[in-house]
Length: 282
Ligand code: AMP
Image (cartoon, rainbow, N blue to C red; front, side):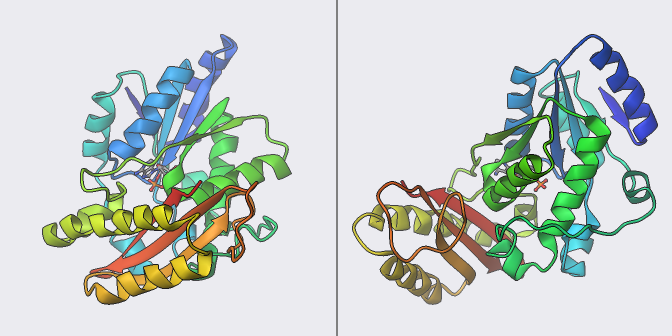
């Protein structure tokens, strides 16, 4: 297992593999790895000759300095976890200066409105930061494939759009959401929850499952109201948004069309920690 901090070292390793025509899988992460990340790594290992896992807490995608400051980080633990899956993975963990070439700012992107709703609406500049770092990582690694979780479904759609708009020669591979035994979507932020709240947070997925059951029987407005009521009655969780959207456009839906695919999205605060989740409705 190699842990590299500079683009130069990374280049040297990649050059060797690429000269043999090997495929490269990229798994971008912000560290504090868990089984969700490992599922992406396992998929990438199955599909490619070499896998690069990047560990970088990207400051430009945080609109809240407290969230950035408190973001968990433990490289030693991350390395051990990756070793449990493979000894061959290359870890690229650059400094801010290294990856941003000294200019730690976001570019401005236009993703035809995908970036304006939900996470984009509530986290100003978030997707400019995400697209900026992902573009820099794509440039540094030039992967054959890159792996992203459906846990961040809006991010996944935006990265697909980035690849399309910039005519990048790589495949984006979506990976399903990994959950804790109570249904809570695995997240690095879960570590910051108290034990009792983490246990209670199964409620988020349960509510999404109920919304899915209601979908097809009731209209989107009624489902929205029902979900808001459930959260209103629950003192532990504060709902930031719940939306039923078209999968491709991510625009909130009022009228459900038979030939379209829909998904429900939720963002919730618990003990000041922001959690997101989503579910396919049909
Ligand atoms: P992060 O470290 O939170 O930036 O996540 C890195 C990648 O792992 C992103 O593509 C996430 O969507 C993905 N990911 C995070 N949590 C999960 C999960 N519970 N299931 C599947 N993928 C995940």
